[in-house]
Image 1 (cartoon, rainbow, N blue to C red):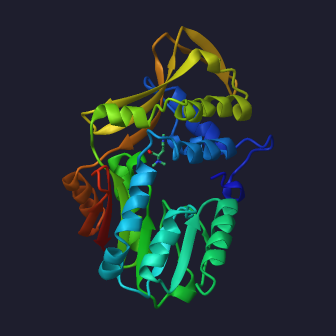
Image 2 (image 1 turned 90 degrees about the vertical axis):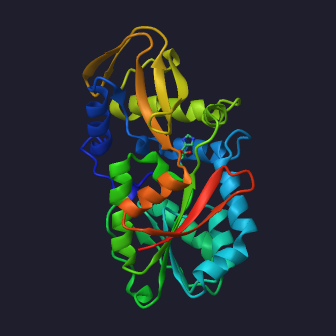
Image 3 (image 1 turned 180 degrees about the vertical axis):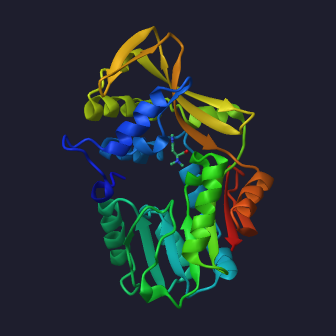
Length: 318
Ligand code: AVI
């Protein structure tokens, strides 16, 4: 998710939005950097690696649902839909859905042209007769869909529980924008990870192989590499903790001693134990998921979970 084509860079090639987010976030009492900045090339590779770690169950659980409940998806959704995927499809999940429901067209939507073209080519090869219309756009906003799919019924597909990485107002805005993009009467199939034992959740975000730690620390390396930062990365440690009040896993980078550094010429300090908050991953109950969807203008129709009740896929209508 490098988003090369839509990036606004200054004369030195620095991504202006990245610098603004990092400088604003590091000047707060609780230092923070938005999670969207994890996904440079290395961060995207590390994320792919996270999804196959034994402790990280969401990808396997969601894939299991798509595989096991294929005929139920077909019954609930019906054939002939234009499937609009928010974020380019991964190699496994999207084909499972497309095979299950036999759509009339597939529209991958992503801010990164590179990811988009790769996903579109991959899907075209797997489904030779299926019209594929990639759209390069920021799916957090309302998007104009290709004219070719204008007359078709629409199914939005938003797997992975990426909605969980947003605080409630942002999630509601996104759901409302998805409704506007897809139109009244359209459907949405959305992945939402479930609340469970804190130990299972914390392990999923702090795997024994250290891949999630590397993913988190890569953000500090990225700040150093792209914003002339001098963060002593080896003095930060990855922390993943369950916040029960907000039903979310939080990832932080914690200073192991007092440190001073610069970012884009700005002097900064952290005392021992102070953290940079880098990600929220909200977990849902059936009720809280329904509530969020309703706030976003979607009526839940049906819900599937994996055999161990770890993850849910919800079908909703606008
Ligand atoms: C992309 N997103 C749904 C992942 C999650 O589980 O919240 C990101 C992630 N962060 C650490 N591990 C995975």
